[in-house]
Image (cartoon, one colour):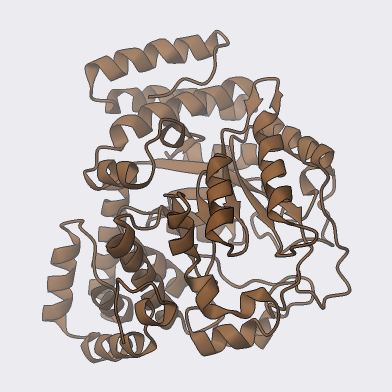
Length: 471
């Protein structure tokens, strides 16, 4: 029985409710009057229910789809402006005891070498990332209580935060590890993590159990209820995501929004981020064996509809996607991207990209500087900002500012200052010249006179060698 406030997975992600939602969407996908009323509601930027958003996703009237895409773009600008936050994944270990059929780290894969970084190797990886200009990491590790216990993760976080190399520093560590206990989430919170990220993979319980035949991850309820335990453990920024292509995309879309509604209803805070990875090739994995893969057009529509339905959430797209696809969805709602990523364990300290321990093939293989120049050329402000997290503007405090569209008052000046740091310390001459022009162009958009005066003073100080200012 569907109950948004229940703490039981099968009640807040109720199969019958999703099937009824999809039937309702099918019945109304050409109902112009209803679609217009949903779009009108969406324009108020308070979000949509999973049922309303599912109607928009199912809609196949070309001119209405144009309105949906246009509205998604407007909402993105209203909440997030022209900023794009950059991060990099850092793979600590590919030891894993799960049997996930879509991931090369699955326990039975004997062709992949198993690697676990020592603290010294993590140190070298972090220095390599700092030398690129990164300030935000998402750490990744397979589930293996012997090789990757929580103590190893905590020690790794401590190591990462301790490294100061030249002007480099990792200021925010997000964590993407397997579902765990309230006690372990409390330890992660105390270690100072940013967002706890966990992809559901699929919300369809039967498919979920087939795709995860062995290992702790087989337990659908334990996995699906992880975010509630994380929040109980004090983590107030959590990131949702599904792996599109494992099951029917409309089912996943409805489940994802129901999960967001559940977090909001129970904890008063929806997801800090939503990721939209698509199934892609990897060692031992043939995507042709999965018959739910989605086209670029459907992918773009999903991004637009999530942006409309959950206007406050950050949206992430990784280097799984090509430059062309990333360019398309940046306009429609994406606010965070990875850049210069290596998805292998120990990949940043090698000249050649190691392919034998990658979790998935990387489509966008450009360097961070090339990604920066690309964003600047499209008039986006690349940002390495971590100010909200470090000023305690997380969870409900962040959401209150975001929903009131006040977060921009901090975000643009912070973005411009972190961009200036990058340009001074890491950029190629070409990127630096383009970036400095972009900063000058964006300063007038800081409308508070005092904030603008402070920003200009701090930009000058960054040029003189000072670092790490924040609003």
